Image (cartoon, rainbow, N blue to C red):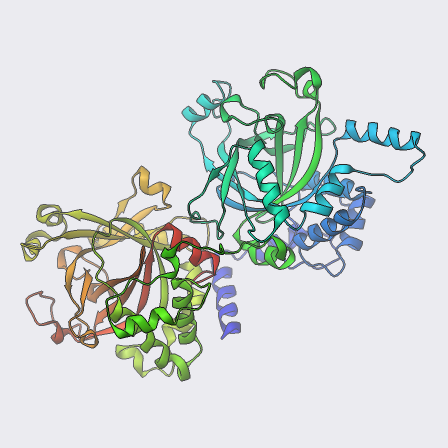
Length: 622
């Protein structure tokens, strides 16, 4: 089925942006004799006739079909040599040819290519070596990084979050009033408990950088980052490089007093440019002028007076490069902690022999989500194993606890779809087979839960709210959707228009915006109840009812009732139930059996920590 998914994805992608393929070919340029699977995105004024540029494209890229593989090639050479040779010239040239990003948002994975001794210091060192009759060029920082840290570096990436003009002005003491879009950024650090050098480096860095421990991974990190530190303000600026002051870059300025960075990072400005879609080349610049080295940063002082010098190169990349990064730099691959908190390896199930068997079946070192992914992948294997794994998912659901006190936003994901009702007439599980190809077009991110009252739901479902009189708890629920400039954008635009048919469409508040919620729709009322699925034999669940007429829920979800149970702390599994006799008008007073509810699949809901593991193990991801 893999080729079918690729074909479908390519087809729909071309419908969404038919010019993309042509643009990518154009961006690679006529001077790229090597065919790249992921092209460079270089500026139009890049000198493609430069002999050094041609050497990069014609020689260095041989047998390497992506810019990241080229960067790995350079890093490997630098980690073995005592000086940069002409590789720093090549990196500088690619940097000059790189595009200036409009904006960075969220987490970007990071890899250091090399550190180098700043120009002035290197000149002094070269002179010293000549006086000692030693002709071999030596760069101490490069040797230190290449021999000791290149395979154990604790630095893992950077996170960017947009700053409003008021906060930006506060942080820059009124100097920057927000003419350019700005971000507050922070670095992330990884820890390898089995690597002595990594731990020593982390300890040293913690003396230089005010690090804060991270109790659990963030939503988009796909990693267990153990600490964060090193604040910076990022925006579009002219380069501090004295040789190319005209170059526009995204400057990451650590120097503002309000950021609290220690020496030497209070002298640091990072600069980044885009060299391929989602891949950014960065340079480290430190101010080296002794006259200003102990004073606070003053943006009114000319850049040339601070004597900024380049001290190395690094890469930032978005999630689309993560698999390739892990393949090329396996030593720097994120790994789950050896001693994960008990939460992640412990089911929360009803007391039963089946529950005990499920807990005992969890493999050592794996989480509950690994177990759920294994069941999901078993369904995908085909008809021969589908029934077996759906049976196991059903057993897990039946062992789950009724979730009480679920509140706020929870992330969502798909476990497996199931062909029920009229879909049973098809030869295969069509919904599950198509989901990997359709997933990039889906903006669904999860659900929100808000405790409310009869009056709170009355404005949504009218007098039908009286059905819930006497209930212990009543929850107003919504489905949540993102708005990104990707394949899911048309679906989000469609959801925004659902108010035209009477459905409720609401937009996120400030807190919800921080959780990447753009719009909310497909409302439901959730209460504790007995399952309407005859296969569940009256099991106690949290039941989501989309069927109230005043919701005006569009087909087929006007026939839908979801049911949820908890299987671990902060992790839930739900079943999608649809009435398969749509002719019968909905009434809660009727016996649910008349609607012939059938299971059409399972979904999962989870807190931020579980969501990070889901992303990390690539469960229900693109």
